[in-house]
Image 1 (cartoon, rainbow over the protein chains, first blue to last red):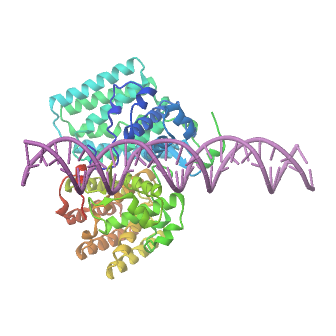
Image 2: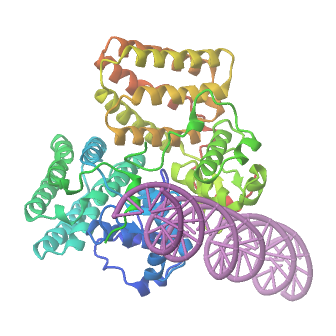
Image 3: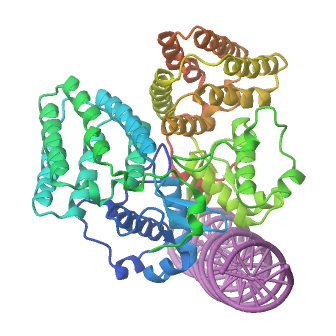
Length: 253
Length: 253
DNA sequence: CACAACAATTCTGCTAACAATCTTTTCGAC
DNA sequence: GTCGAAAAGATTGTTAGCAGAATTGTTGTG
């Protein structure tokens, strides 16, 4: 169903209630699905801090880990480079990409603009079943937050936004939103999953559902625009050095 | 200098006064430069209608044409797929991507939003030498338009926008603009190069320079927002069928 | 003649080995 | 001991060939 921009981001593996990858499951896939699955597995490693910024990604090691050929793993790394999660330097390899504070703020600023625009274009009113779908995802998200299930939180959060913006008639706009959301995973890291932040996200999602229910577009636009504000404040400056490919010279971890 | 989003779009090959590619020149390149050069050569073929929508791109033929290995050509095709200029289907190959009228309108709508936002964030006033740089590019663009040099028109038009938005402090925003601009090359095709349209572009560029010179931000934002409007009207509906991968079943050209 | 099964062809996907490059270590001169 | 050059090691980049999928062409049967 990918009709406008680049490769599909709507892979079945992105279902919010899908369990973590297991090696045997990955090994049963082929072709594009395999590449996508590995890219997403690595993406989760980055999101949850199992792979840290500037950490090297050795093709041979990773292909051994996933039990795939290096060829496939290279493709996954290329995909992650396009998504901005990985930085590749010729003849030197790949590292988890590190964003400076300025870059994070820039990306978030663009996200605010395009998400507000999407809210402006959303087809209102929603059908009752569409509202119900949003509520169901959000209940799952809230529950995941209760029990501290970071992976479920992460995925159901994505699902919420996907479900909401799927009602935006401009697919090109939605794909820009998805692209930027995925880029933001590079600096989302586990540190932003503080209780205080999680509560804000939940409240904000329920407020969005409420605005949708009452077809209050003005409020919806404001909510979508301001939704990212605290994320930016939670960004840790612990890796606040500027990007530098020469970082590859020193190995780590 | 690519610091925020995906691969660099600011390749030296994109200089506006650079002559057309010649095979021997391409053959002298290596690595990333080679991939980028081939991708850009194919991009120009698409822009100028030498490659038409739905036309098949056979890896072996093209690699023979450019005198490179199939491996390199595959990389170029992958790049063009990310940019939305080419559509690839597993085990079937690549075709020049065809956008529906709706998709074109959607992309243009997003471009208007992000370019207006960039205008809003532009650092004003410009230094005199920055204004001079814009004027120089635009004089080149106008001259190219006079003599009907489509390639020079195309490239200097890109250079104008790059030069203008290089003063936007938000690099992530500029990269979204560049990405969408490059996508639009898929439907730019030679048909939009009508005298009437070319004149509009030139007038609009001089108006932008004028607004920059007087640091009139409000007018600048309006100009950037409305700058794409006629392009959309010029889009020919001659290929107005919806996208369909099964189009690969029937060969053409 | 229509149609289905099968065969041949075309083209892409993938593998494994090799080459090129960068990094680290070693060794010797000062 | 320090510096620099050269060798060794680690890692990525590239090549050629084969495997596999999709398409096209052909043949045989009703």
